[in-house]
Length: 134
View 1 (cartoon, rainbow, N blue to C red):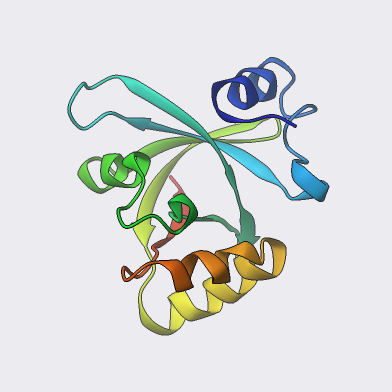
View 2: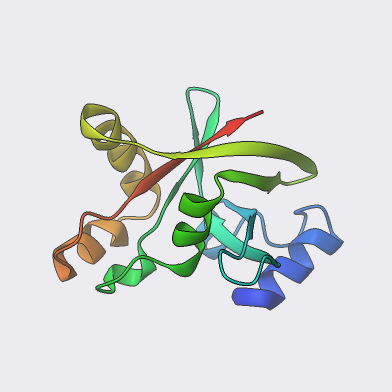
């Protein structure tokens, strides 16, 4: 099973042939953000779903009390790079709210049911992020 930097490296080397279909076939993409403090590229392999034509990801950090660093990066600079298999594109990241968030959460939790457990573990509302192709 691939994790972290190794997951990203293998995904990029193979255009997602290795790494897109992750644990139990759950799909993963590569998100590239710009570090809000360093200005350097930061890459992450994340579970996603395509909903209404956009990739959607969850900033769960396993239910930790704080958002993941990549989420703070895209809040500071919402223009990101996305790779889904061999498809590489620029996207604008935005956090879903209200009814839209509820709909998207349900779609992602169907693919990765642990998200519901993560939400129970934390007081923060776990962000759901829509990656809109630019």
